[in-house]
Image (cartoon, rainbow over all chains, first blue to last red; front, top):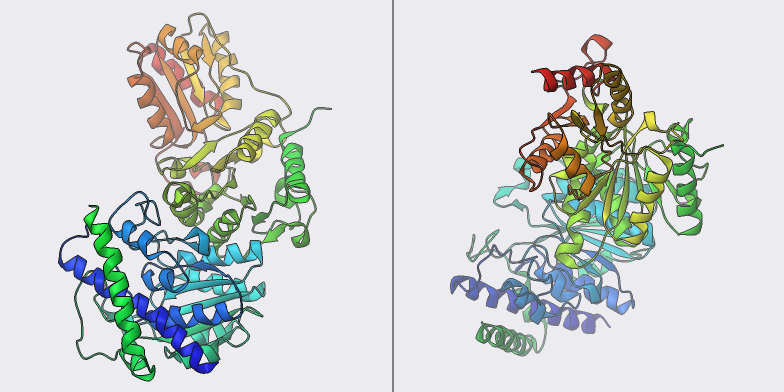
Length: 277
Length: 306
């Protein structure tokens, strides 16, 4: 069970990593004409959670943030639709309107983000209140500082909603570190609201343990992670930064083969769409 | 006995919650008074949802409920509070259909009042929403108009901003356009100014000045599409005057500009009269109120004799 979870999670992560790496190349090749927010390095968060909820046979409503390619792909969003969206096609996953930051997938209940930092926290809470369905809100460590995001987390606890807040904590707001911006921790704030809340590293086992009891009550996970590429566009802030994906690949027996398989799949998708340009 | 605007809103809300699976969000809804008596005595189990004091977050909660098809009614007690509440609504709900093909219908009851309300809470702020795409705006002042606004909301899947005014709640009468054959001036009043426009017209009539009144129920979308409105302006001697309970620099100026550039209105000028371009204080000496009948009369006389 545990090994299967890790392997299946790795597959999701591999799709995400290879998608982002290929997107990175296309940015460098100047094929993309819009700002792109790559999620490489952080993919294990969405991949682990998606695998966990699938094992529970839950199809949650998902409120995505701007750096959301990995969330979209991990929860089953169509990679072709995402490529088309990045190319500005009308049949892209957000009708060519969403670009990289406002993607969605109706079939998988993934709601787009409007670009107002942290707005998805309030909207996800309202949606969960109205539907009472399991709901996941993905938010960055910076966006969660928005006053309305904090108020929303508090209200979710007040109403005892079946909601999971996932703070993807890469420690950076563009390049400004968390310690410069605030002196508090979001999991402690949530705890102060009376919410079940944890501070975790982004390894799949940690996340799995943290998710125990999810949707039975409101929950917040602050998951520490490392953004591999620039805030926007193709570039690398630190070549020697820790890479969760590389670490986990070593632990999977056929990790390299899986990686190559997804690398080729993603490359084909991109090439096929670029040829139609 | 004829039904008032207050009773109409109350009845609509009851039906919306008890028969249509709707929700009603707002602050202090179940407090004494029930928002000027416009709400039925229903509670959270019925869909009457007390939200926090965090206005910006509340706007987001309502958007979320809109995405789930619960067609929330959102009561904002003072239109001035829209400066907080509008953020999520205009940036998400109003754009959702255009970007993602996902409608997010919300019925915003945005309530105005004046008199000792100070620098933030008083008056109407519909101009705040008017400049952003994706929202329909109406300012119903009669029972039938309110019913019509709600019917429009239920028949469509858009965000509706309903610019209400507490002074209209007791009203039981319908307000009709008044057309003169050759008016001196045509009034185009919005919201609460429609009542004082009638009073001003009576005063001016006694002075031998002929005034037509074209009631502006719709703020957005807006077209000078009523044939008679255009004819009235074209046939007027001195032009038109748009009256508003918001600042003159908002929709009033927009309408005046559109009327003057519309084909078929000849070269008639259209003037504006709304709130003074200054901050309202609490004391009557420093308040900033919508145009009174006397102020409207004074402006019309200026237009006629200047």
